[in-house]
Image: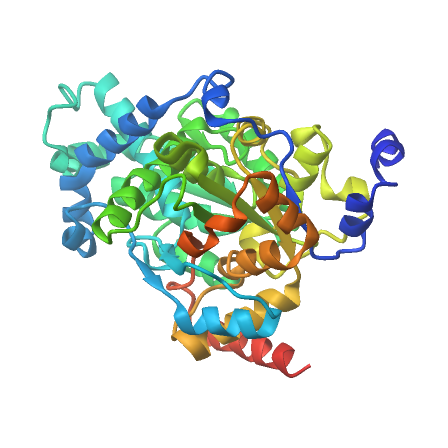
Length: 449
């Protein structure tokens, strides 16, 4: 336990609430205007566009390998939908009024892997495959038809190479499914939080699953060490990978097109609020970075974390980034929101995000499960627990003093009636029916209390 940190921080109201697992809303005081942020970070819109171009090159392969993507021409993308009945429930339950639209971004329905992780993980696996193919003469150039990645020659070549990853579950599914389809020998190191059905799914796809009785950070460390000892192995590093980050950024370009097609304005008078579940930080960080490249200071990206696992909050509030864990503050560090069960944030992502993301909040286990049940009852949408974390964001902002301060600091209160709120649903469609039913019953039980 880090005693220096305890002396410096623990007497503040914020950290007292964090330690007592009280739900909070907090503004990121390290954030700076977008124009200034671009000078602090060595990445730009060019990196987002490069990643999108790579995914387009792979579209012919993806269509053939995963026919369910044909409807979107090989793009791994989701729609958004209004959730008006849930909006009414939130207004009634939290005694507030949500002006503007409340939309749900349906990454729970993403093809191939059914979670937000499909964006970054599949991108990184494809980029690695492209790099190997170019270096070894299987591709002449990036102008080739990428359908050839389905050829036996490619599969036999990739079978000589390994891909490894450490995960609580969803990242491993995305890496495993795409890696195995290409022919790679894939090993997924899974932490103690990983659900059994996720392990079973991976094994059914020919993926080697290593089960650890440790938390996420230790599973990643062990996977990384094994991969580094093997020159034929490539490690998808959830803590340190810029390629994962770039894969997630592409969602912003696509969302912008969807909003334009729906005639939804985003500008200084029509602010966009996006509520993103946050674990290690890669997916919400990448999406936020991409959205900022398009909308600048007119988009407000707000991260959601469990009260028992606020690793990004702690990393930024202490300015220690990945130098602290939730264990340093005596927090229980257990959550049913397994995709967010990360005790230490990514140093890479938190150092980028300090300049870009606007605010964050925490929610309890009970809130997550209650919302899970209500989302099924009111909207007929089944999400896994972590995917509900974004739902409560708008009311946490509207009903807390710190949320009101955030709105006032950015002169947003008079613009809320023209705002759009997007809740990012991160997974759920691949959860087995019996597991989802168990979640639902837990949610109903909480709702009765």
